[in-house]
Amino acid sequence: MVLPGFRAEQTAWRAGMMVRVQSMIILLLFVWVAEEYNYNQFFQSWAAGTLGVFGFLLGGTLAAVYAGILIVMYLGPPVIPANR
Image (cartoon, rainbow, N blue to C red; front, top):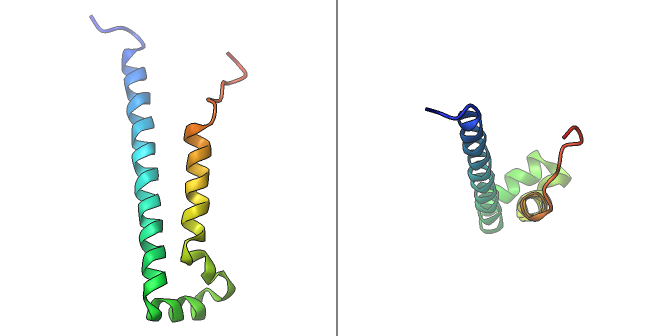
């Protein structure tokens, strides 16, 4: 016999794990872009021509901001819904 809420809890747990894995993959891609930007002059010139003043975001600023958001989300206190 399967408990009534078990399937929903299992699905919610899997979805939460998928969000965490995707967040880490996105962070690693941001770090990769930052490293490529820092060591590739052609990429720097392309970013300066295409992005203009926002090119500094590719130098690691975007990765640092995203990492900070992840730290706050995953290490902060859990949010309890108001309707419980």
